Length: 125
Image 1 (cartoon, rainbow, N blue to C red):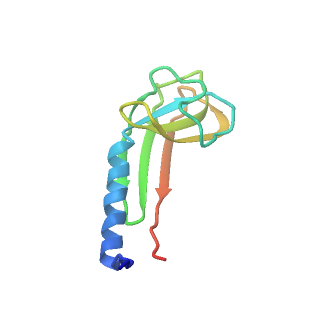
Image 2 (cartoon, rainbow, N blue to C red):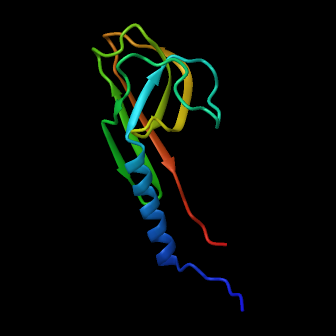
């Protein structure tokens, strides 16, 4: 006899909560870069790393259907770089996401705050 298990709504909610926390725990580091190639699913690193930018997130938040990471490049950090990419990765260097954008010149007169929100919702079929 073969039968199909039905995941309950409470079970689905708990799986989503646990998965989001697992994701937040795994993606521990952010790194900035100056690369100009568009992000792809096969990316394994920033294209061109900004020296000293590989570090832990300033903060992260786990919501009911998202994980959010915050990275700040302060006034006295990474000056002289045209920052155009950021990655999120684990302690082993595995890249979970890479985001590219129009280059922004980093100087002592500006501070960059990157807020990356990853929405995740599980649905039942």
